[in-house]
Amino acid sequence: MAKESFDKEIQFLRMLALTSGAFNRQQFADRLGISVHTFDKTIRRLKDIVSSTYQHLPEEQGKEFAETLKYSYYDSTDPMLLFLFRAKSVKETESQRLSLLLGAMNREAMTAMELLDMCCSSLPAGVPQPDEKTIRSDLKYLEEVGVIRKEGAARPFRYRVHNDLVQQLSHEELIDLYDFVDVMANTQVPSVQGYLLRDGLKKHLLRNQVEQPAIEAFLYKYHYYSRILDEAHLFTLLNAIRQRHRVTFLYFSPKSEKSYGSKNTNPLFERESEGSAIKTLPLKVVYDHQYGRWYLLASGREGIRKYRMEGITRMETEDQPLSEEAFQAKRCELDEKMKYSWLIDTGLPVTVRARFYSPGDSEPNFVRERVLLQGQWGQIVDEDPYSFIYEITVNGTTEIKPWLRSFGSSCEVLEPVRLRREMIAEWKEILAYYEPFRENF
Image (cartoon, rainbow, N blue to C red; front, side, top):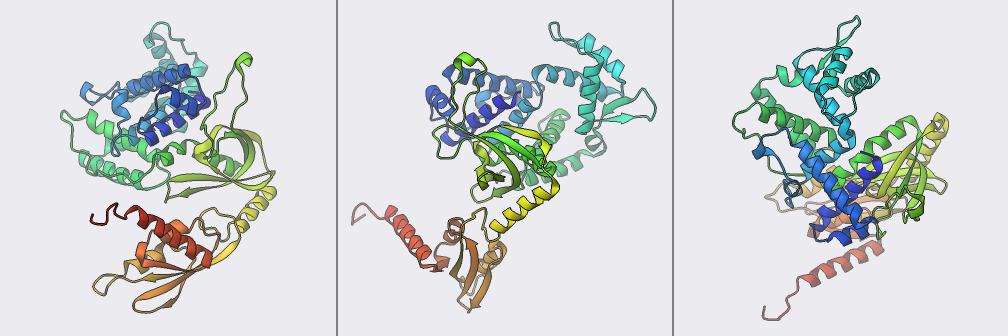
């Protein structure tokens, strides 16, 4: 599937999750900047992806599109991620051909010419027949991603599916491995590969059991929809950073009324996009665990800029790399600006002082433990049996404020005075929400 189309579906699924299906077709189309007809085509494409993803499972384990996008915190994110990334990976014709190749190599090791003969005789009528170059290209791709491996040192090489992991482990060991991958995929970033491995292990376990095993030992999620969907751009950016390549993309800021712009190929219907065309040098990718957001920090004509990855569409990587010296100079500039950033703020440094109150004598001092764990380079400068004063210099107070606020009554901001007044005003506003409507309530 084309990148442009994949961007559209990411934005569509993000809105579907955030609005819980409250938008009608026209509202979705307006927000995405596409026509209702294109919206309907997107729905049909997503339905096709779901049906092709689950077609190899027994009927009772298959999923309809409506079931895949359940408004359940536990059931929805995982299938969304899996079928979107499968949709991005291969085209429909490639999917059919690769399925045949993997099925054949799973039974026995085969040469490229044997696989070519098998494909030509097995593909449905009307599907283009592959040539030797196509088959060898498929084998090279599958070998690079670790799905198959080459056997023998002499030509012609034979290839077979690289599934030693599931073949050499016992059922109990596979269950333990599944539990470990399940925990790590749900708690670590990035998580895409973990979810794909988890899905593959789950299907292998289901495929080899007469009755569905109780393999869902953990019922929890520790992720956000945006975190997972935005990982579509993550590895492209990380590779660009490693190779020192500039990238171009169309950017929609969080304040924009639209989150996507259609790319018209017909000049008669071409219209100006509402996004901003960006050409920049990516330097660092930052994840904000508090809000579940990915940020790109990059250098352009206007200096260091920050972009929310959820607003990035139509990303392309340029071929010409920047010199190592020039790239390191940009990285040093970024490091200097972010020297005191709580997350990505590049404002003027300010010293924050806050008093944290310890819990009662009968409880462990979890407040102090949390401050020491999460307080980054800040220090405890004064302490008594009942409280301690924490001090840190940060670039602005916007990003540290939610962390201070999360301690509730256990934290009192002392300095700067402006931040203290802001916190007082916010707590008064929260208090007003809980005041009774009647005096005798």
